[in-house]
Structure formats: C-alpha cells, structure tokens
Image 1: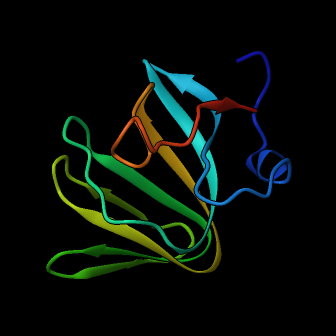
Image 2: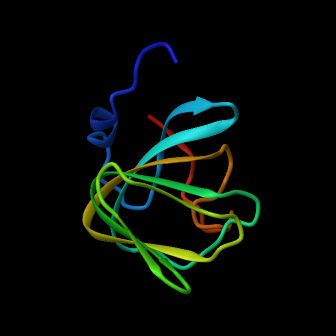
Length: 117
C-alpha cells in the first residue's frame, strides 16, 4: 500500500450488493469491503474460515443450528466447512479478510469477480 485506505471512501465508490471490493492485501489475503442487503445464499468454504467484521448495520449469520447477530464493531468467524448464510437487515457494510482467490459464494462458477478499489 502506498497510502492508507479510507473504508468509507472505498464503500462510496460502488452500489453493488454481495460484490466485495479488495482495498488491500496482507500475507496473500484480500482485505475487502462489501455492501450487503437481504439474504445471500447458503454456502460454505471448504479450505478457509470466513471472517466478518460489521462496519455499519446489522448482519445475521445463519448457521444450520443457530443465528449469530452482528452489530457495528463486532466480528464473527465461520469455521471452514461450515454452511452459512449472511442475511443483512437493511444495508450493511462489512470488512472481510480471505485468502486471495477465495470465491465469496463458495463456488468459483458463481463467485463475484475480484475487483480492486
């Protein structure tokens, strides 16, 4: 990185939902911001945990046996191989950290493309 990344400014550059934008890289991981609204689909990541940090709004992470509710400033990690579904209550802004190349949908065929901002 040549300069600090302002997450609010990065989030203001797009309107797409469930389409993360990479704002930095760290040890072969993408640090991403995303806007969510409504439910995503059920999926899992076989090879990596799924890290969620809520920046604004309220996000439910539905698991098959329970629902975890995250508010601004809260973090939750879904262990690899665990099926889950993010459900945003209104517009939610999040920060994600994943190994570069990890498909956000759990499937490369349906994943959002990697976009650098």
